[in-house]
Image (cartoon, rainbow, N blue to C red; front, side, top):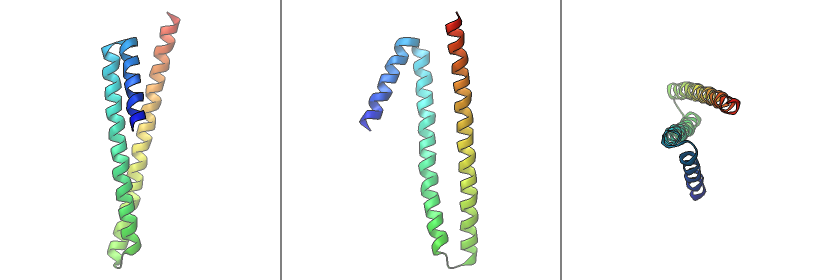
Length: 106
Protein backbone atom coordinates (compact mmCIF):
# COMPACT_ATOMS: atom_id res chain seq x y z
CA UNK A 1 0.00 0.00 0.00
CA UNK A 2 2.87 2.36 0.77
CA UNK A 3 4.33 1.97 -2.70
CA UNK A 4 1.06 3.00 -4.32
CA UNK A 5 0.84 6.10 -2.15
CA UNK A 6 4.45 6.98 -2.98
CA UNK A 7 3.80 6.52 -6.71
CA UNK A 8 0.69 8.70 -6.50
CA UNK A 9 2.61 11.39 -4.64
CA UNK A 10 5.38 11.34 -7.27
CA UNK A 11 2.86 11.58 -10.09
CA UNK A 12 1.10 14.46 -8.35
CA UNK A 13 4.38 16.30 -7.81
CA UNK A 14 5.38 15.79 -11.45
CA UNK A 15 1.99 17.00 -12.64
CA UNK A 16 2.17 20.06 -10.42
CA UNK A 17 5.68 20.93 -11.66
CA UNK A 18 5.01 20.37 -15.35
CA UNK A 19 1.49 21.60 -15.94
CA UNK A 20 0.34 23.41 -12.82
CA UNK A 21 -2.76 23.19 -10.66
CA UNK A 22 -5.16 22.21 -13.48
CA UNK A 23 -3.22 19.03 -14.20
CA UNK A 24 -3.09 18.21 -10.49
CA UNK A 25 -6.88 18.60 -10.19
CA UNK A 26 -7.39 16.40 -13.24
CA UNK A 27 -5.08 13.77 -11.71
CA UNK A 28 -7.18 13.80 -8.51
CA UNK A 29 -10.40 13.37 -10.49
CA UNK A 30 -8.89 10.41 -12.35
CA UNK A 31 -7.76 8.75 -9.11
CA UNK A 32 -11.21 9.17 -7.57
CA UNK A 33 -12.84 7.61 -10.64
CA UNK A 34 -10.32 4.76 -10.51
CA UNK A 35 -11.09 4.23 -6.82
CA UNK A 36 -14.80 4.06 -7.63
CA UNK A 37 -14.05 1.34 -10.18
CA UNK A 38 -12.08 -0.65 -7.58
CA UNK A 39 -14.94 -0.41 -5.09
CA UNK A 40 -17.39 -1.64 -7.73
CA UNK A 41 -15.11 -4.55 -8.64
CA UNK A 42 -14.87 -5.58 -4.98
CA UNK A 43 -18.65 -5.25 -4.54
CA UNK A 44 -19.40 -7.30 -7.66
CA UNK A 45 -16.88 -9.96 -6.66
CA UNK A 46 -18.45 -10.37 -3.22
CA UNK A 47 -21.94 -10.43 -4.74
CA UNK A 48 -20.90 -12.98 -7.35
CA UNK A 49 -19.31 -15.29 -4.78
CA UNK A 50 -22.39 -15.00 -2.57
CA UNK A 51 -24.76 -15.74 -5.42
CA UNK A 52 -22.71 -18.70 -6.63
CA UNK A 53 -22.62 -20.18 -3.14
CA UNK A 54 -26.39 -19.61 -2.82
CA UNK A 55 -26.94 -21.25 -6.21
CA UNK A 56 -24.80 -24.26 -5.26
CA UNK A 57 -26.61 -24.83 -1.96
CA UNK A 58 -30.16 -24.01 -3.06
CA UNK A 59 -32.85 -26.54 -2.22
CA UNK A 60 -35.76 -24.69 -3.81
CA UNK A 61 -36.07 -24.35 -7.57
CA UNK A 62 -37.15 -20.72 -7.17
CA UNK A 63 -33.97 -19.85 -5.29
CA UNK A 64 -31.88 -21.94 -7.70
CA UNK A 65 -33.15 -20.26 -10.85
CA UNK A 66 -33.45 -16.83 -9.23
CA UNK A 67 -29.83 -16.88 -8.10
CA UNK A 68 -28.71 -18.18 -11.51
CA UNK A 69 -30.57 -15.32 -13.22
CA UNK A 70 -29.01 -12.83 -10.79
CA UNK A 71 -25.54 -14.24 -11.52
CA UNK A 72 -26.08 -13.84 -15.27
CA UNK A 73 -27.39 -10.28 -14.90
CA UNK A 74 -24.50 -9.38 -12.58
CA UNK A 75 -21.90 -10.72 -15.00
CA UNK A 76 -23.50 -8.86 -17.92
CA UNK A 77 -23.63 -5.61 -15.93
CA UNK A 78 -20.02 -6.07 -14.84
CA UNK A 79 -18.97 -6.63 -18.45
CA UNK A 80 -20.78 -3.49 -19.59
CA UNK A 81 -19.00 -1.44 -16.93
CA UNK A 82 -15.64 -2.86 -17.99
CA UNK A 83 -16.35 -2.07 -21.65
CA UNK A 84 -17.31 1.50 -20.76
CA UNK A 85 -14.09 1.90 -18.77
CA UNK A 86 -12.01 0.53 -21.65
CA UNK A 87 -13.78 2.90 -24.05
CA UNK A 88 -13.16 5.86 -21.72
CA UNK A 89 -9.46 4.97 -21.40
CA UNK A 90 -9.07 4.68 -25.18
CA UNK A 91 -10.71 8.06 -25.61
CA UNK A 92 -8.40 9.62 -23.00
CA UNK A 93 -5.35 8.09 -24.68
CA UNK A 94 -6.45 9.42 -28.07
CA UNK A 95 -6.92 12.90 -26.59
CA UNK A 96 -3.50 12.70 -24.94
CA UNK A 97 -1.91 11.61 -28.22
CA UNK A 98 -3.51 14.56 -30.01
CA UNK A 99 -2.31 17.00 -27.35
CA UNK A 100 1.22 15.55 -27.48
CA UNK A 101 1.26 15.84 -31.26
CA UNK A 102 0.09 19.44 -31.11
CA UNK A 103 2.71 20.23 -28.42
CA UNK A 104 5.52 18.70 -30.48
CA UNK A 105 4.42 20.35 -33.73
CA UNK A 106 4.62 23.83 -32.20
